[in-house]
Image (cartoon, rainbow, N blue to C red; front, side):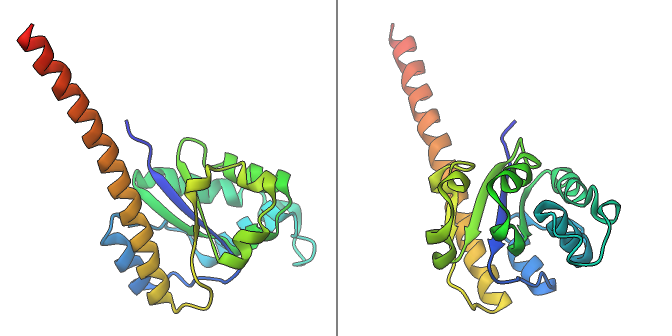
Length: 179
């Protein structure tokens, strides 16, 4: 079974996932997990261990990221998650967040400035070709259009790879038939 892609937006700008954004992403088969902004906020606090600064107890945020990950896996599709605060997480916490998505092909979506500042340890968590830069300050609709472009380019690469495998297999079958 093919692995699905998850596009994890890690900042620095917050992206509001409204109906228009969901619609544009769904048009290219990229879904968003059915979680509230509050769920995502608690997941951010959990990963960064910033719950005390938000006057919350550990038990108030415990399992929030796991809930987001479970809902992402249940979609059985390519997904988009916006967690801008993860950009500020230390390397161990970032690794923990990425580990929660094990089994999916994780892509990091950042602004060019943030991409330049990503620690080396962070860039080792995902393959370099899976780090994408999006211009800062885009409207939600423009951001969704740019995400759709990235998702389509990934789908094209996936299909090109499959086509290459099929061509090789076809050549092998022709050779076997000739023999």
